[in-house]
Length: 547
Image (cartoon, rainbow, N blue to C red):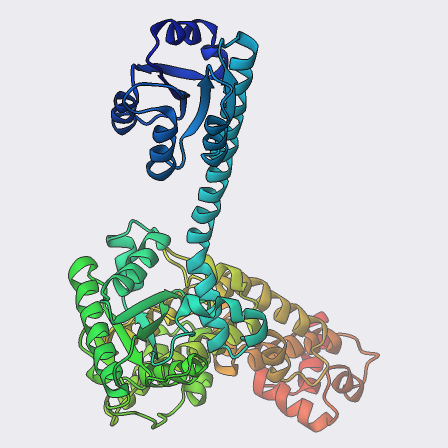
């Protein structure tokens, strides 16, 4: 909707314009009047006028002088000139002032509305253009952080192409000489806890809070830009840009800034962080080197000494010592899991963690690698035991949130707890599967022995097939049937021997071979040990019994 101001000293003309104009059809919501040029200027100051209809010949302040003032002070105002004189000077001023139209008195309805329509069309075109411009700027401003994030990450990944992205370098201060750039790598150590307790499971809100704190704690000289790392939901990348100054000053100010960030995150949201900082560089492309250093510094933080948030740089001690790997103890842990002996599995695990606790140092990086390795090794065990990995991913209140990810730990004690929690989850799922399969497995083994008693049956045949340890399988079989596997093979053979000895047409040697004994004497000895009589004596007793 528009506002129109009529500036004319003649009341009849103002009234005629008021009557002739199609104000509603043109979208004019307010029509104002001024009786002279000075009053017109005052109303322009008081109201936001869109279109002014100006009489060129007025006392005190004429139309020509008024247009000159309007041209300077109100460049966006559209004007329509009305004059009773076909005077060249008026026309020249109107042209110079870029008026929308020039009307001669007496004004008629058609010409007036045509001039007004022209002005309205110009206003609508301008507003549309301004709206598009604003929308483009809003879109650009909203996408700028994503664009900067993409640029920084491509530099860190060393995939940035200077030629194709040169126009965007000013966005990250890369076009200004004397700037220093520092990369930081930050990890939230208690993400699951704060996401649940402080952010109501809203990950996006948590990420916004972290990056906002990092970015807001800035000043005129040191600017920070941070974003969630695409490689982990606990990891954040921060890029610091210092305008001018010295390299040493950039390192000091960045360290001070990040410590302030760590303190603010803890105070505001209860977030515990560990952060590593790289070295300052004057070339934007060296952010990649600075970030590599930041990751190394973070990964070398000693978990044994970690108490709360920490910010480290190259001046801190770097732990490079490798501690023993869990790989060597996995066979023992596997046997314990197969046999359902969780206490033994945990004691084996805790023996190892004690070695780490008693060592000279155990870094966050080693903890990460150990977690990943432990889950991979447990996955292998679970797969061999036919445990669906999908059930492990989704089991429990939190599950493992996807196999292979890092968990919350802000101390070595919490790291130990996490290892034990992972072991608990795998053990529970393995036990479910083994319990469901146990009866069918044992039944299959018994059926095989019943039908293949004459073969050379070895327990390894079953341990290999069902991925069970020898001791565990023998324990299960005896618990189910009251006999060990070897004892049951012997029982089946001896029961069958009694049946065969009842046939007088079969020789002892034939029976021995039919039962899988290649040596007749060995069969006779085994029979005597089992029944306390020889096969021949047993056959004689059968014949006498029939008499």
